Length: 431
Image (cartoon, rainbow, N blue to C red; front, side, top):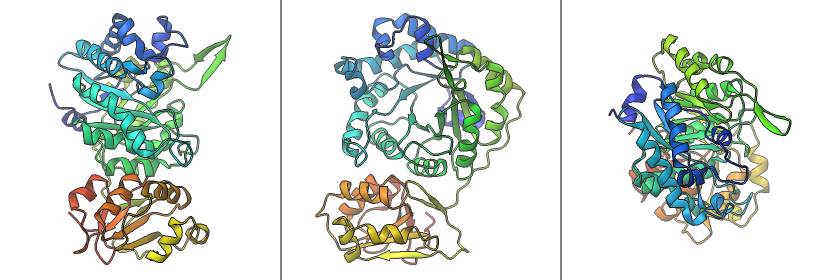
């Protein structure tokens, strides 16, 4: 069997479609977790996988969304988290054979990260580790994080996969009508941050029909250095006689295939409301499309959680420098002046000069507040490896780091967190 990473470079791969809607047609009730059927009704789950494979899917996604302990405990089966995820992958592997890849579906926790909610970054990380272990143990070919609305929760999931498995990663986000997530992350920022962390593909799913994902995909493609993936819903759901109905027809859905492919998509399928018929329709369209050469962007970039900056060697940028004293004021909660300054269009990014400041404060609390309030991208300068490590781990963007003789964090560690490495003149270093 070919390697997934090689296959995605050779052609557009066809994903599958919805699991929940299809299982509901087979008797899954509203108060059941769909993952429970991996143990209680395995033949039904396998038959669904088989239908998608017969429709032409190159990649089958497992019935494990969201499959984490937080969500499963709401159904009283949190203690079966490992078992349910393991079974979901094993059933797919039994159907996949030698010519179909198995992608393990992992969704968000359903809880909000601090300061918007009560979930810490480290807790989210630990929640994702549990299903990831089961997924890898069961033999999944890759993991697909999907339907995320908060970029930093997605970062926690990606880091959990990078640090506890060897699985290739797909990172997929759901967007509002303005091509931003529920938490305000732009499509470009999502692409920049996820690809900087080393995922194999980045993209969008759910949201609405395929028409709703054209603009986010175009925005991602404008900054993408990796292939994209897309899985739209079968239009917007409607409530008809107490039943949720998706009105879009397969031929309407697949009519967007060429435009997606022209904008960097190399893995395409369906999300809520789609069926094997939708996958067959996409397959027919793909057979008639000449796939263009993938033109990707490798320009150096910075990104906050909300805005991005593509750097050019010929462009001069305006930087606001924050000394240790200014940073101490921020740590103590005095953000007012910086918030006003950072709204200025004349400032391109901020330089945080920690100097020899030690990690004597709650870095997660500081970073979560800072990244929520300050919209400009940042570059960091610090002599403390511990401080740099924690800041980069928690920061929901792509930060720059000044690398010099005083930088104690290694280049590999900086690259692990997707940092843009710059010299003392704040120019990107080609590595």
